[in-house]
Amino acid sequence: MILSLRKIQINFFVRPDFDRIQHIIGLTLIEGVGHVLAKRMIAYCGGPKEVFEEKANKLLLVPGVGDFVARMVVNSSKVLDRAAKEIEFCIKNNVSIHSYFDEKYPNRLKNCEDGPAFIFVKGNADLNAHRMINIIGTREPSAYAKDFTEKLVSDLAPYGITIVSGMAYGIDITAHRACLKNKVPTIGVVAHGLDRIYPQAHTNTATKMLEHGAVLSEFLTGNQPDKENFPKRNRVVAGMCDATVVIETGVKGGSMITARLANDYNRDVFALPGKPNDEKATGCNFMIKTNRAALFENATDIAQTMNWELPTNGKPLTQTSLFIELTDEEKSVTNLLSTKGKMMIDHISGELAQPVSKVSVTLLNLEFKGAVRSLPGKQYELC
Image (cartoon, rainbow, N blue to C red):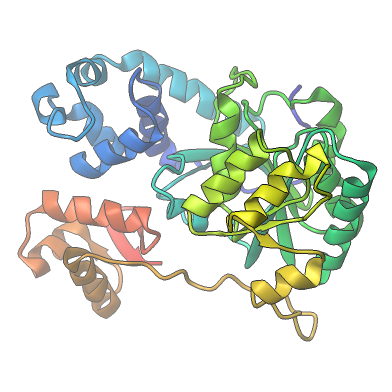
């Protein structure tokens, strides 16, 4: 079921970027090319469109590209047609598309090597809000866990947070609905295309979330909520947040996967302790015992660990710049743009005495890191 935006207005995908996003989406549709390899190929070739224009023997120089993938890229007009149809669906249904070059793409997720090359977003959420956490847990929570989740969201609300979860039964939907009740922005990350909501019973909640939040996915329309999609969904939930908060879970399941991914991304993980003989708490207790998660009992524990202070004067907090590590070549480009301002790629090439092809790769890597943005006319400027 397609979500209705009713009277909500959003700034969705604009046509000048049609060509770039079409080629990024098309590249991921090629058999054997996932989001990680797609980004690697784009960086090597100097742009999404350039990948499709490259000769097969040159593509073989990209780590991870074999003969089959190289041949498929060269003969790939069908995937571009499919990508164009997806973009047309998004324009018609007010769905934003953000590639990893886009300044609206989640900066935290951009720093994850396996982050998706693009995401589809329906709603009004700030994907780079100052404070973002996810609240997750079992699909069959105890009454205590549900009550605790509702109180936790209420107590965290004054800190100006955005809460992310997975739209699933149990703790996920409890957290989303508590956000609606307490006017906390909330983002639901789903494991299927945005032409439906799964579970269907949560469609009404998802629609309500659009005004002060969003529903987000990396999957194209037509993708069902298949089992293999949920771990991919979980990496987005973990990657776009400062911390993962696990309310109640067994030792197996999606919550444990998300927590492990958060640890891999060097994000904070919190777990609510439970009774030793409670099967629903075995996962949380295990993570605490093995130092994979910090024990917490209330919102104050999370706030103190994260060094959060309550906003003053009722003014919303803004996102601070994340630390970005740059190579020597990238520093040369950013230093030049800092001095000169907007510059055409040819002028950058001339100033640095480097071929345009090399500068193009450097600029693409800087866009990926969120350090520069491309402008019409092949111009670039610092973000």
